[in-house]
Length: 468
Image 1 (cartoon, rainbow, N blue to C red):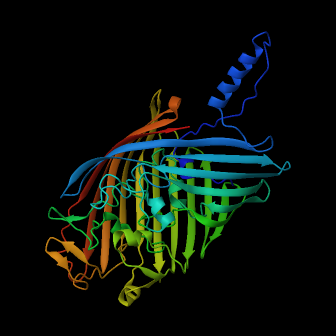
Image 2 (cartoon, rainbow, N blue to C red; image 1 turned 120 degrees about the vertical axis):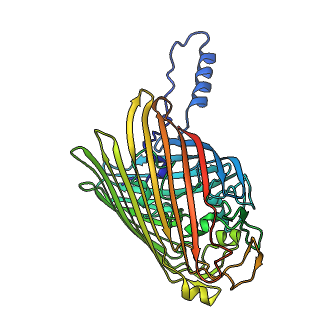
Image 3 (cartoon, helix red, strand yellow; image 1 turned 60 degrees about the vertical axis):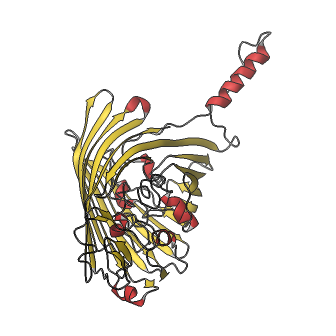
């Protein structure tokens, strides 16, 4: 099965640049000038391949939006990208045919972030949110804008035996439950609420701030402990150095498995097909992480507790069903963590929770205009017990709260939203407008007067994506 990034999902068409030979014609007295002009035009409009044996295709997209938020204590309007691993990027894909059954090739994808909506809006970063993926690559380093290597791997592909990838790969479970969404609204609304995850939580109009000066982020209630990343349902949504195998597709089914340093392994099963008037896609994936030299970047940035050793697993399922004649669709995803990591604080080790994520999206995909399909959607999600550092320090409405006074034993975050996407087929483009609402709550000794009665977070966004 061919490996694809999230950018190929959701009805977005990516156009490739093809190599066109120069034809020597009309060779008269002005032949050299004519030939030079044609060569210059060719160089300006095509991507060159490295040699005569390996093809080269360049694809990608530019995606930018305007995001407004109101957390009850502050409101601002920012220009951002659409989020790490989904944002503006370009991809080089090469392939060569070894024999009628086997081909070889490579993929290299670079991501270019202006301001990441995953980190923008926190009182520490303001409108210049550093790339979340850059933070993972540098283990806490901040940079915005940045250019980061998302994927770089070679592959061998057999129609009979499947495909093997080696390098910086998308692991088998990466975006697994998200990628089955075929509504055309995946970038704008999926079970990873990238828009606003770093914006400060607030209580009675006062923003909550951690001792290191970082705003206490909304994403803390969507924290994946199995990977120590604030990525909600997509707990293993970043690339890794490793090896991946994908089976051939048989009657709509395919399987994947990958292993990466040090040590992460996962498996995934997928199905896609059509039955009469219905289109169905579904997936299930399992990931286990026992990394001894664990990534600490986001913990460092946000002041959340450090882990000594990672030991966790994550199971996720996702399904998409669309009635083709009417355009009605339903998408759902569920994920659960099993955490047994070792924290610096022993009590945190003993009392770490197992988090749950579930997400539903329903809507209508219809072509009312010649421009392209229109997608209308509504979404609802619940995050239970995803807040992991139970003993925490806060600077809140009452000032500094000593460690141990606030003992969080449970958390809940409810998310709902509405939106519309308009596809413009002639330009391989989508434009959108959407609204999201986050309502966060905590429970436990000392929460009253510090982390109760939190203000809701409101986000409105509008943007566009154009593919090439």
